[in-house]
Length: 447
Image 1 (cartoon, rainbow, N blue to C red):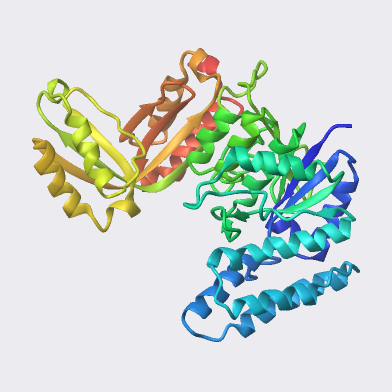
Image 2: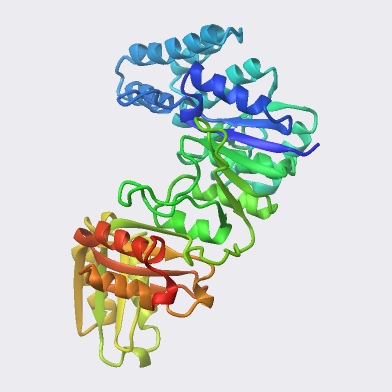
């Protein structure tokens, strides 16, 4: 019998009704032996995620404000699920233990992790699986760096003792045993680590969408689904804003060459999207691109200096300015006498004058200009490099849509083409690219 690890997100464990769906999914396939769960998410618009309520408790504690009412909401929600699912995990006693710890003003990581802890305890009892706490198994060093090899070894040893188990996502421990969490969405990472540790055949990530779509459905009406995608393609799309899966969850599964299957808890018969290591060979007539993703609100600092290309260390001096301010750089398109630094506008706003002054002092450029309200759009596909005319079709589509391209950048893998447009043209550009490559009536052969 094979092994599957099934991770269920917050929407999949939001209430007893969703947890019943989870049980039906798990029991439908005996290979789903290890389950990783998030804290309960929103049940409806205007509802609160359990993790947000826990963080609110911590904020109230830090400001010497009463937190009892907020914690009671958490208490009532978990007890209601225990009653509805007709299980007895001693939820009241578990919650009372947490309430006592709150009186000691514990760390934010400890408080935030309790949503996953309680969720896993409840679901383990409901499934009849063993509960295996991530504390002590998912390990971080004293500086908070995740210890991959140590964690894999510890999880492999412990889970080898359990035929079937539920593991809480999102957290692990420092060497001294104190709780350390991943960033938000980190339960995806835990699921991938568990899949690696048990050498799973598939890592299933169950959420509230049926995998990846070729474009944002808020922009493109009924975009096609992506049935298969490579890790590298997914990395490109995730980086540019496609956010179904926490991007750091890709590595542990990729390291062990484990396919990831994104599935929909509310539509369990939908096959979702398979993410695998190798580039996907798409059949005749299939779109040459895999997907389109992007984000708004970037700034571009355009720097001009005559004979820049002959001046040793010029770009290094420019980049050192941003390093001094701990600002990450998105892209650095350049020409013979020009270089542009593309970065998220949020990093620049508080430092723009100081940064420009330092660039002038260190690099002595002939001119520096700042362009705000820019958007970046990535058109991604592993088959793009081998198909002539891809760039021509993309640029022609934008021309016909009246979109002015302000920047063009292509990675060395030739797996994507990134363009910069003004924020106001963002949606128009994505619709135009999608229509050119995907919708009937437009094809590569029309170039």
